[in-house]
Image (cartoon, rainbow, N blue to C red):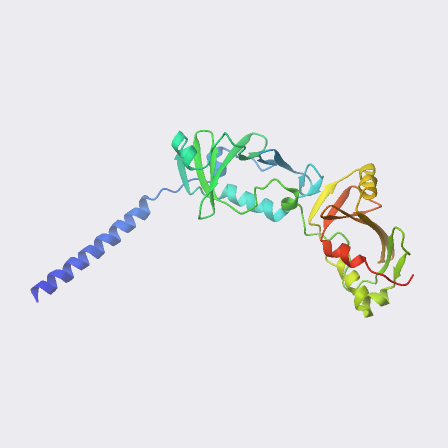
Length: 285
């Protein structure tokens, strides 16, 4: 009986000691500052540039939105907010800038590495992403471990463009007349009633509802004409809705489908291949 009591006391003692040590370890765990604080970024985020080897994208804040400078088009505000959240989140850990840590954490300067420049003054070099979706960031003489979101720091307009606004502001209930022109073929005119009651034509109508760009290319008028003339196949369409007529050129070049408003040739939108495929139909003139 005495042995049992001794064993019970020993277990209780070990359990109490473990709880005490655990509490102390939590108390002693260091709380690090945010990345913004650590690098001294005290002002608002006005510009940032993402660099990956020879590829880069620069985004700046203007009166309306954060704008992708290369195409003068708004960036995805959700991604901007995620980037700000990362910068304002507390650092997970800090490492010394040593040769061993640089090599171990993915900073091999012989290769073209990723980096991000904040407000044209703070250059952060990016290292490995670990199994917990955390990334290592080198700034001056310190390496910081912070949370990371996949593709957020890729220098591609496809990743960063604002995809919240449809190319054509067309709603389900809008009346829509469609005119399709292709080289060497009769003009195809599809009245609104046909787009409602004929499955073949309703598919075309549905192609333009909630049509968002996959990517955007900035072009001049002369570049636009050259692109359409040298395209594999091009299609012209007129959409009559809400009391106005919108004209578009849609063409296929290599594996991509492009679409632009012929009255506003500032952008060529990269759109899904299905839209182009749906327009290749035969209909009565």
